[in-house]
Amino acid sequence: MTPQISSLLVANRGEIAVRIFRTARDLGLATVAVHSDPDADALHVRAADAAVRLPGAAPADTYLRGDLVIKAALAAGADAVHPGYGFLSENADFARQVQDSGLTWIGPPPEAIEAMASKTRAKDLMRAAGVPLLDPVDPATATPADLPLLLKAAAGGGGRGMRVVRDLDGLKEALHAASAEAASAFGDGEVFAEPYVERGRHVEVQILADAHGTVWALGTRDCSLQRRHQKVIEEAPAPGLPDTLRESLHAAAVAAARAVSYRGAGTVEFLVTADGRPYFLEMNTRLQVEHPVTEAVFGLDLVALQLRVAEGGALPPEPPEPTGHAVEARLYAEDPAQDWRPQTGVLHTLDIPGRVRVDTGFADGDTVGIHYDPMLAKVVAHAPTRAEAVRALAHALAGARIHGLTTNRALLVGSLRHPEFTAAQLDTGFYERHLGALTETTPDAGTAALAAALAEAAPAPGASLAARLGGWRNLRSQPQTRRYTTAGAEYEVQYHPVDHPGVRVLSAERHLVTLEVDGIRRVFHVKRNSNSTEVYVDSPLGAHTLTPVPRFPDPQDRTEPGSLLAPMPGTVVRVAEGLAPGSPVTAGQPLLWLEAMKMEHRILAPASGTLTALHAVTGQQVEYGALLAVVQEEPQS
Image (cartoon, rainbow, N blue to C red; front, side, top):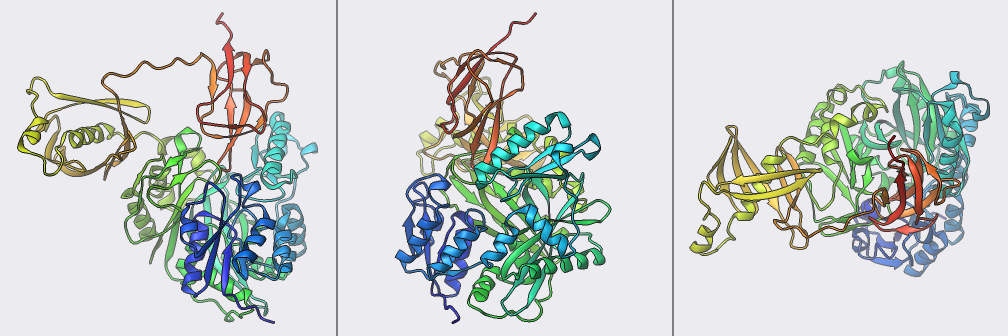
């Protein structure tokens, strides 16, 4: 009997849950959210018709508890479950449990998920289907001729459990680290090795299949710009592919889908070498983060089609013809200049202008916590040509106002405008080559500080004449002074209300300052939240978060030399083997591994010496600034 869906539970959170709810509402379906305790007031909860609490905070206690999710669906009267991506989306046992509970599973058959769940088993299956593969390498017998190697977790994805090895001396430690990370992320520590292809491209094919024998290959996507093996910028179609290569990728993807009797949406991923040879990487048996670029190019709603297929509907024999080009950028709360360190706190403002699609799980005033991925939004531009789409996306991001957290926004704009990217010279080593230049501090911070100072000195609207004059009482020989810090630098601004070297003040209000800088008129938007000390300045020259320096700062507590403080809230997932007070350490040696927001961070010894204190233990939750360990530096000879 064909299932008819009337109420849909999304077993996920954040932007993907909000995005699925949007389609469900358009189709007239009731919607049910699930949420952890930190997500009790999250946007995806507010967007649903009903919500069910999953007690706890960590994913293992909440969004990864399939039994609780199914119980929530039954209690709320849902008759279908959509897993989104991540969490339980590629868990065959969960898919079976959903079906065994009488609910409709919005995804491929559990057997197809199972067949592709292990990358090693999936490669065997694809080899039998004639799909080209990279030959595996046995780490136990690897030689210098096999280098560089890529270690990959057999289960899961998203860059977890991946390491590039360029030196055999580091292979053992890399295997241990990759296995530990994979076990923590996926409950499976199996790791395999294959050749690491330098300057390869990550190209994938979106497929959609029904239960009636139709399989669509919905074009290609290029996802080569990645940090830590996680995608940052994606586009469709993949530019610059010869027609023969594009056709062979489509054929291989369809063969992969047919090999496992696939149904629903999925993605077959390939590595394309610099000389144009494709190799199968993996098949993701779910909706991808980057699916909006395919939707834009083909004019489709992939979630709506997933629901149609789940209800037994048939696809037309051929998909619609693609039009134009689409580019997506992932906006993260992270600091690319500080080893991509994730950021937490209140997102005061998220405003992205222009004719772009914005998929987000946050609104102004929401809090970005420590437990989940730090992605704030996906921003997508679609235009008749690649150049127009890239330009539109860069312009929208450059004009965005994002306050409260450090983000990768400037990196995204710089990437989209980089000559290599605009020329479609794409490969996975882009950020290895260009990260330093893309994260340099913008040179106009001094002008932003001047705008902030002028806005601070401006009278409030409707103030009396005396108050309006009060801000300008200093003589020209005694200018007003303000000091701000941003990006580790301090700026002192001495200003008069009328003129400054190279700058003419055209107007100055509390939230808007207009300056003529070297003969060019510039408008600066200035915002300061009542519950925050930071001042946010946005202009065509860039965005700056400024921290006022008190005129009479309070004495600061001194931190013991050699103290290692937690750079972010998180969980201690590993302590170096044998590490204990009294252990000798060398500068740069990894001592602890801290996991925050789905990323693992190494805490390194700041100098060679002796570990005099160790306060961290595996499994411990630590707050930002917590004292983890102390290293006493050895005296200089």
